[in-house]
Image (cartoon, rainbow, N blue to C red; front, side):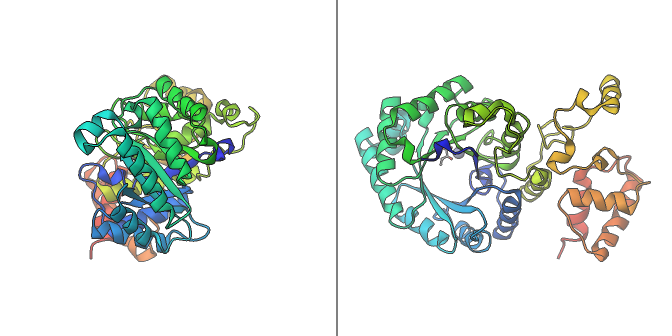
Length: 404
Ligand code: KIV
Ligand code: ZN
């Protein structure tokens, strides 16, 4: 159906797969806060959780469905195993959303079938078809994932996908569950699916991938070139083990190199129209919020959102950038929501204005009273440290303002 669409759907799974990062548990209020931020960022789909997994997850999906899943807002999705009770719980939690999606999955690789599911290929094929049809009895928008697709026999994979689409799946998601594939191989897999699944034009082809070999983003970009039109990703790339494909890296790669990608989406090369619906200026704020609430730090050299991503240390680079930024910068810090103020080092001589501007960039809009309190604390900390980092500022806000 929509594989001819010329925008890439951004499906954010920070609140589901991202929360599976060791130690990254979020409470319901934190999930809601992040969901609102993802909506401002412009993601098309928010996977809000796994409704059946726990009462807390159910409540979070339901609240997000109600408060963020408005008519103009994103699609709200819940994960569900290919089991009736899971699917029913997902449907109930999603009921308040203007646009809901059930995402159901079952493993299809022989290794998972033999050791985990203890089922035959034909049993799994039947379950996939029946459970997609069951999900479809609750809502129109149903996504199906054959888990460990990358290690699944390709002829069998085509059969399962065809059956899922025939049962009503509108999105077919291809997971690299163990982060095993490589860009060329993944591109070929997506191409093979587009060419060999007879009813593939009735579904959007999506990709999902983990970063065990550090290749998730590269794999996805190759998938886009071969027909994938939905990308499942997380803020800061958080997620199970080495994480998921990072939203900010995918979006900025598609943004900075849009003229390279245009022809693969059937657009004229010279078109400057965006390839996603993301408001890139919201990226930095959202990244900081997710890091802050999950407690998962962003490494300094992390692409796009790391503390050093726009910093120039060597004299030659600094000289070039001062003459013309394009000498050593392929994108503007402002495009992800950082102003040139980021180059201003905050310390004991900094004024309230610089402090307020940095707070805004980090996503904090404080009242005058709270700003005053935080500023006093900032000066105290600045007296003890040469330089105040974003982490120091976030700590100041959470110590001074957010404490009950
Ligand atoms: O990695 C994976 O296979 C998943 C599925 C549930 C889509 O997260
Ligand atoms: Zn995953």
